[in-house]
Image (tube, one colour):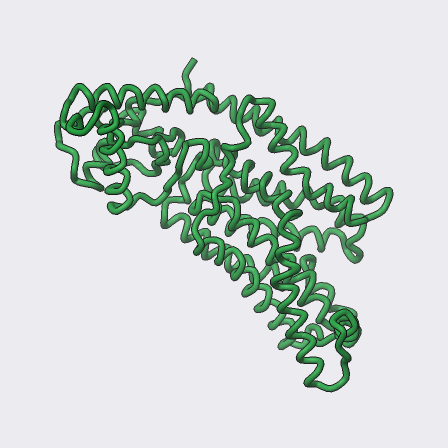
Length: 416
């Protein structure tokens, strides 16, 4: 059977397994929340169900939990994951207050915060101090405390689901599908406890989560890590649920503008998502297909400096075949490359993949353009020796490469 067809079928079955386990686990948690009581323990259980579904799915399919993108990723992506929600939520509520759609500095919240901090409200100065101190504590201490339950969601959504969807669909479709599933997963609780018009609230909430999914998936793929999404999700919840909504004085119509079920936050975050949507298209759709650990290492943005480092590492590994000086020995290089190819096949076997030599040939072409250190007469084994660890997920068709391997490369369907 064609390995591409086999891999596609396996991915579909993997996704169906995930959805099945998630449905069973989430249904039990939803029943407890809706029928018994919306306690923090039941809500926390619900938040853990995506991770539970991911772990069970990996186990059933003989895959390792270690293949999820656990690495920390770039500091820039993690910082952006925190700062972006703080910015768009601040802009959304600032517009609500400036346009007179709702008031600000809810006295009940100030009194509650003042007592919680051991401070007394009253004068404008003391109220400002209470808001500043509580905001700082919520945005830091409470944010850190919330990361455990947030990770319970994001390990499943951005750590597992989006990578499986990306094997089958484009970046854009992956964002839409994962965002819709994420929203639907919340529906029973929103319908039971949301209040107001459920259709309006569900529509606003769905638009917001799909837009958030675009940004979070972008940073997940470009960083090769699930942690920017955890940061993003946690900051979003803190700034809306713990800071800005409690500070807002709500009137008869303010409910249609504030919180996660009103209009303003979805409008602002959709504008931000459109920027990242265009950025992803311009950069090639954040073209990674597999979690970093599944391919040993993933660096989605190939640059000459990165290639130089990888080439140097490959040379050091060739030296280790039998001692210094064998780097220039074609036999030693060939033996090393053959051994690396076997290792790649073993890694890919767990995911139902095999190394396609056409892809290796395409990698050789890419290395010629990027590094300029391979001779024009290099062969496929030389490409494998240069690549070394099969950690580079290649996206895009290198100029002049033809054949099925190039097609695979363009779709990002195989990792070398």
